[in-house]
Length: 169
Image 1 (cartoon, rainbow, N blue to C red):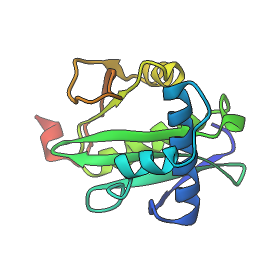
Image 2 (cartoon, rainbow, N blue to C red):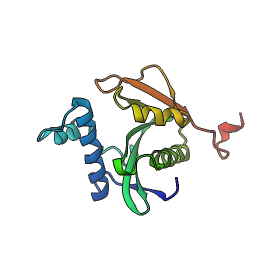
Image 3 (cartoon, rainbow, N blue to C red):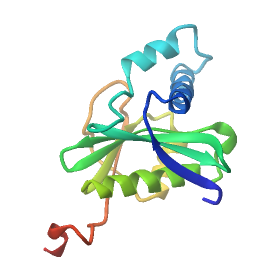
Image 4 (cartoon, rainbow, N blue to C red):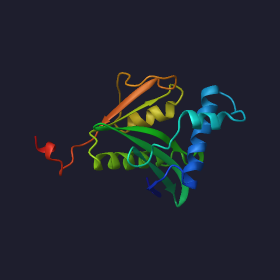
């Protein structure tokens, strides 16, 4: 993960908006297996907004590689757990540890708020993402969401925090 740094950002911040648009553009291209058409990315962003990736409902992490904007990942808070979403690394930076850096960051944030696990759903065509999750200890689980884009479901248990009173049980 050499050269990677992460920080929290608002989803409406300029850098975040750029990355979320790039993420959604790639999702549209891969889903339809063709270049996106005018208006499709805007429609997808409206259908699946990211405005809840901010306190109190979630957070958004941006990643930089050697100081250059390179990726993002979001969390939505659920009762006792966190939902991972919007994991994206710019194509030119893939294979350099960005996915691992983003996962480490969101796992730390989730643990800090007391989440005991992270769950996510993803699509069958996102084979690289599924491999990333498996490499980092996420295991496939039965469906916990429904929808056209939810085809594989993963979960990772987070270690109990030392300062968590329930960890002593």
